[in-house]
Image 1 (cartoon, helix red, strand yellow):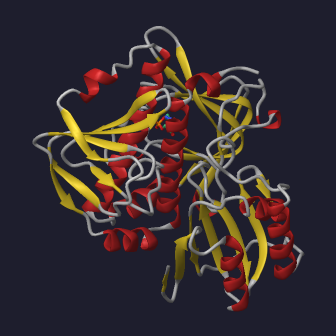
Image 2 (image 1 turned 180 degrees about the horizontal axis):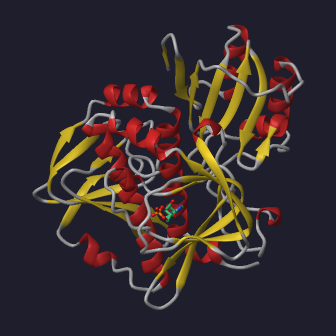
Length: 392
Ligand SMILES: Nc1ncnc2c1ncn2[C@@H]1O[C@@H]2COP(=O)(O)O[C@H]2[C@H]1O
């Protein structure tokens, strides 16, 4: 656990959620507690005002329901940052009552412990067609970036794969399917819900960005068009190293999506992918380092009961390892690394990376968190494609 004037962070297996709530309550803290669980695509959020939990978000729940849900997130990490909280008081119960009730309901099995089995099972109210697609949802907290609002009718494309486009927008309401077009057909990868961002990080590096997928509105969708000039400025003042970490993250999303397509087309050839590579890091390793690849190729592989699933193919200029502020659910805990013999790695100063993340604008942090969450969801789909895409 680390404590400084602005933040508190740690591992939930070391300091449990009731401990953290108690600590923030006793110290009359104001700010935002973010809870990350390896089996959910989006962090849970609890808003604190002078030691009281005033509102919370967890998956598709809000208020007290969301806060109780978080008691089931027994694995993962948390970060508290002292920020001005404008959320109004939705949660009326006192902290002690919440802690006692939450703990009791968890013990009684009334709150589900979040583990691999429970991850991303959706109920029908989120969807219009009853599919099992996992839904990516995010808290919408940065309205100040929204310049304009637009509506898209059911079934219409929001963006089209292969077309140029460099704006990023936020889904204020509704759902959209992410579809990868292949020469044969379209593969539905996942579904984006309210709070999701549309647009890739690479578009912040170049003016000629191409859409990597088609997004189709499922029901009426309300979009918030974001202030790109402001986002470009905020991105451009990041260090080149931090920007390349962001671009490397974006690459992971594209490649994990490629893997889903390969599985759909039955053209995934794991043997070929791993040929000439040796194990660099075992899945489940406790290695806390991260590295820049200076030479050679590294393949990120999730080992599943059905066999290894390659998720990303990284090369010179990409990053591997454990970057705590960018939680993709990949290595070290959720994937192994295989590398070519000539691989050369340079260690990354994780304290500097964390500092730059903490000091980045809320929108830059939201973009990184969103892409990392999409990588994590897409990985789960790749590992259980049949189950995730099956219609009920
Ligand atoms: N696997 C995925 N999961 C979630 N969103 C995705 C995925 N692949 C692509 N997208 C989104 O779909 C968008 C298509 O246009 P962009 O490439 O600009 O930005 C892309 C992302 O916002």
